[in-house]
Amino acid sequence: MEIMLKDVRLSFPDLGEPQRYQDNPSNAPRWGATLLVPEDSAQRKLVDKAVRDVLTEKFGAKCKATSKKTAQQVLDDLIDEILADKKASAWVDGNKKPYDGYDGNMALTAYRYADKGRPIVMDNDMSPIYAADNTLMPGKGGRIYGGCYVNAKVEIWAQDNKNGKGVRATLMAIQRNRAGDAFGGGAAPSATGFEEVGEGADADDLSE
Image 1 (cartoon, helix red, strand yellow):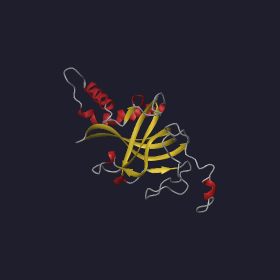
Image 2 (cartoon, helix red, strand yellow):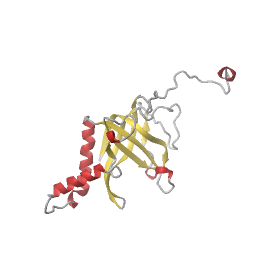
Image 3 (cartoon, one colour):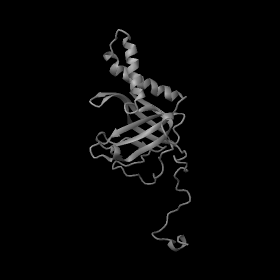
Image 4 (cartoon, helix red, strand yellow):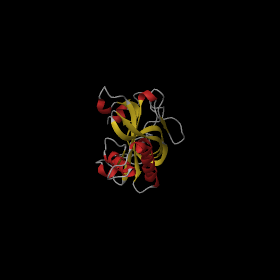
């Protein structure tokens, strides 16, 4: 199920070269980002509904009534179990994460594996930030970073395979929306104050 999130804060972006989880060569390379959604927002409700809808579609028919529970209760318990497991759920309570800026937010972590082709990463004007070879487009350095606000399209889907049951998110596209303080307390990256210079120009002045 595809959903759009608007003006959410970006955390832990891996949007250039795809990375292998824990740098393990046996793990497939992937791009990824975590999107911080205010816990009291309409967008939080949007993700909540999408998560429950895909889990219900995947597991609803497999949940059978028992002597103590209806089929719906069995399904509800399974969904709650998945969402409570940080390894099984891409959608977690940010208040339980020890990271800057996570308090008061839900966190949705989305990946896209390299064999599926890179996600779209674009600027406010929809111009690309990364080229097809994963290099930054000219002039796009510092345009997207952990702490800025973005719009993002993600696909929410239910997992049921040899790796277990869960709910995941695939990153489809991400767009810079506006600046925000970089995580860690720094200012947003900016080229203000610089100008084009020749190779080695004014090197003596800079060393004083």
